[in-house]
Length: 248
Ligand SMILES: [Zn+2]
Image 1 (cartoon, rainbow, N blue to C red):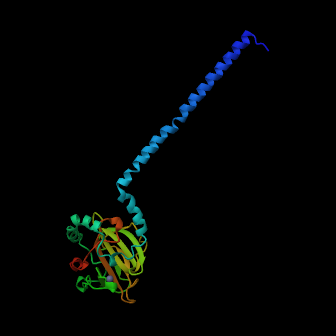
Image 2: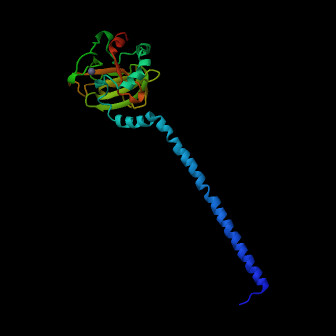
Image 3: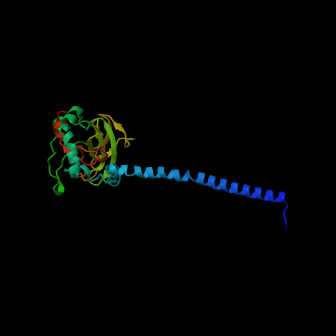
């Protein structure tokens, strides 16, 4: 079947057109697929960012450690007398300031109706299992209002076997001082974690929950300095007695 010269030219033109079209398609495909590749370097640089967090491994590790540890601040202040070495080394530069900080906070005697002269220094008293008290027990009738001894954020409301109904408050400007209230009968109405309790504000009521002898209603009040407020359940204990003794 013979094609005329005009048909041959048309056929050639069609082939050339088809070839160009194919080339254009190929190039454009290559072009549009490229943005996929450029996206990878960002992905790689994102990976390059990941090495950076490892450069601050504590930042990555602490939240996890915190996540696991947070549910169990129960054994907290009563048992911990010596935090791990690293927090202590962190403490040393600031540790000397603790007394000055606490003095400047002018702690309020945290139970309404109790006078400073009635306090007894039970800080060094021994407790079960060879523990030391590391706190002060403030004897008071059941349901006596428990007052925030200083301004500070309520960081945890927690029920533990030993402490019963407890409250952790972060005080001082840098939130490195923890005020711990235990054996509460109950919290103040509507009290929630995160609340900034003001000095003198009622945060709870005296009771005998936890391992307090039934009927032996008192506030177990403990003060300690933490290396990191995120690890608010352990730190270096400070005797509240001399601080409260001078309180009104
Ligand atoms: Zn106690």
